[in-house]
Length: 247
Ligand code: ADE
Image (cartoon, rainbow, N blue to C red):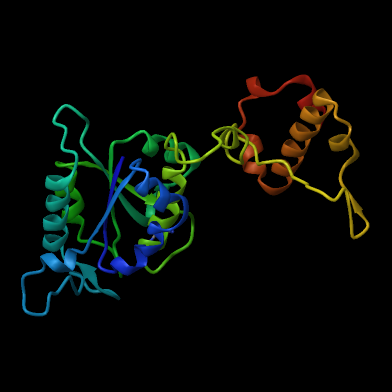
């Protein structure tokens, strides 16, 4: 997979060079590049923003430096004419909500481009024009407002790249985690079995695989009902067994 990030604060994306994403780059599983639209601004001050038409607070990113930056990464990208066009993810509190399902969809793509708007966002005509070149997906991390898209891109790239085959050492760990299968993860314990007068639940020490699996499932259902009742209501009843209904 290739990931391009367009940002006027490229230093913000430095953490992408660390840890598992950094290793995926070194191992050749991921190509990663950050491009600064400011380097495509043509005036003496390299202006990338201006005041909004119609008034209002804050500044709006000008479309042309973003269009030139996007064109440059499209030229440099894999550019397989037979493949679908790249996906342009535009982080915005006004986007669709980024979920684990979206992370799986994006992990199947060959080329992702993230456009990190700042201030009040990017001129809407850039997004209209870009829809003719790429598949545009405005995407929100959740119902709160960040100062810009960079932190959202760090979160989304981590969620996506760890799903690329080979990035995580043990792929089984993906199957059991929260948000896979519509439930939150069960609580986990390690040695010692007694710690500060607290014991590990007896079932986990029993060695009985059937009872342990049932305990895990019950804990998932109870925890999800308590913390995320919205997820319980969204469950497909066909995925529930009789013992689930007793929880
Ligand atoms: N930019 C500003 N707020 C954001 C959010 N909640 N999600 C994604 N990008 C953002």
